[in-house]
Length: 582
Ligand code: FES
Image (cartoon, rainbow, N blue to C red):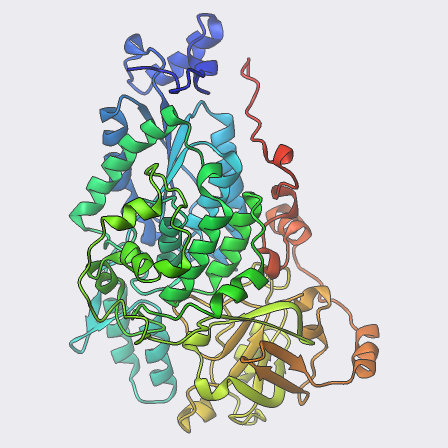
């Protein structure tokens, strides 16, 4: 076995481990502490296994077993596996929002790759923000990398019917609020939905980002949709361990995979999946790290053609296990091949054209044909207008068709707490035509853009049978959510975007066909309001939240930190440490 890359270049880890001086002694000694036989060390590749396993994040509990399978594969291929823990971002428990910590996790993973003698890495994530954070780190570090996920959790059942994480929770909570489901029954739902480890089993953000990691070419094809305990999942992990050793030898890096074509493919897969709006933010952020000029305009242009074909909640009715049985992401890609760049390369070293040529799948009801989509194009729309000069996003596939063109009076909530306190007040002046507005919920206002964008329907309207209303905010919404919710308004209200100037009673006009979101208030009046606008003071005066507030970019740029995005190829270069005395 050759210890070096195929082109004869020394490996990064050799700077630490091959020296015959006291530093080489010290570095090899650190690995002997792990019980490794360094007598047999001849320069084998050292592979990091970055694991976001954590009991704070039950969605990621399967990653410990997966890490063992990856290690077995690395060893089989002659590499040295070193597993290390990283920050984990548990969507259910982390406040104010796991999104606020995505950039911190990306920094932590990147800095681990920079600081330690690693030649390649296998990234283990699952819950919503963990995979985007790891991909951002991989794009910045540009060491050979494979992304794996932990898999969706098994379906629970309530009253003999399978229930999907998140989507059924929101649906059944509406039933409780409308008085049609008792609290005791709702507790049964809780037990059914949280049936064990694994990510949400619908097309929420975790499933979407795992699927897009495949489409980007960074995750083994067909692996992401396998449920958490699928036997094939562990075989895939072992194969990934062996493959990363080969990738190090071939010097196959993310920069050769995360190309403009890869991002265009991922956007089209997102549309066909009816995937999470959060993916727009994450793709923009990962592309920013890779110096790929992805924009909201480019995403919107793609949305004009590609319909939603995948019948999985919330856009459809099935669960992730149905998608896996139907052939998973490769089958979806084969279905929309006419819109994809199949020359894009993957971690396998092969192009999508080669990979898809081997895919055979039977016609099925989960991945629909183009003439029978779950929802026609556009499934996602980028809106602009006087209320969203830099853009906003609407998941059209999850919005009511009769609200695509709508005009109504605003009912404004300045904060999430105020909204919760007032939304069910019988005295709230609101009709089904009203437009519910939430502000101070964006990247800086939240902070971290919490998933508050699916504002609840006021109880009195819900009890009268209203199921959807137009809602607008600078927040995000869970990928498992639905409704006519305009999200990610940029610039956000906390930095003085027009959303900050809306008053209750102002008319707001939504026109999805024209891709417009407008505040029907004369510019002179807005000018007067702007002159008197005072930003809300943030309670965060120190630490990471203060860094976040200072550096976070707006939603139309993916909410990365300004200083983490390279501005040129030379700035992108990953500078490793000078190996010397620490
Ligand atoms: Fe973790 Fe949904 S809460 S994947």
